[in-house]
Each structure stands twice: as C-alpha cells, then as structure tokens.
Length: 117
Image (cartoon, rainbow, N blue to C red; front, top):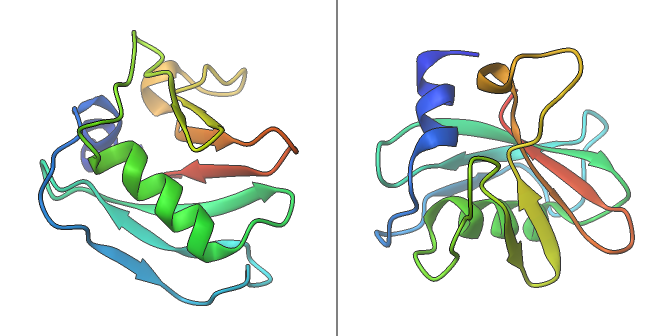
C-alpha cells in the first residue's frame, strides 16, 4: 500500500466537492469502476467490485460518500459505517497487515466493493 492509500484509509471525511471518475455504468470485465478521491487529502483509490453485480454508479457513489460525506460517521479503528444499507469498514485481511488493507463496503444481498488496492 502506498503512503497515499494509507492516508486515504486513515483520514476523516470532508465536505468539499465530490471528485469521482467513472469508466462505465456497468462493471467492466476487470470489475474496476474508476477512482474516488478523498477530498480531505487528495489521495485517490480505485473502486473495484469484488462480489455481486452492483452498477459502477452505485459502487462509486457509496465509496465517495464513505470517504467524503461528513454526515457518515465512521466508528472505531475499523471505520465502521452504514450508508444506504451498505456496511462499510476497514477490514482485517488474513493475507495483509491492517495498514496494508483496503476499505470495503458490502450490501445485504452480498454485493461488495473495495476501495483501494
């Protein structure tokens, strides 16, 4: 994980203008929808669908709100938050240190999006 990605996952959301780059409405073959920018520090991260079939529009919207919407209160070290039914967090991964993990959002139907590499 790069320093920018680490800062992306450790910073609090800001309320400045949204900056989202999208490549398609539906998930492309690689499942990468585009990037999201943390408006607080300018760090960017890829938004990647890792389960299910959410649209890229939804994946990018949830990711952007998780990072940048000040009304979304991320709780604790795991940065737990619920956004429109999506459970978002900074999960522990068995193959990575916590600092090298990515952010993740999962909806009740099993759709899942990761924010970062």
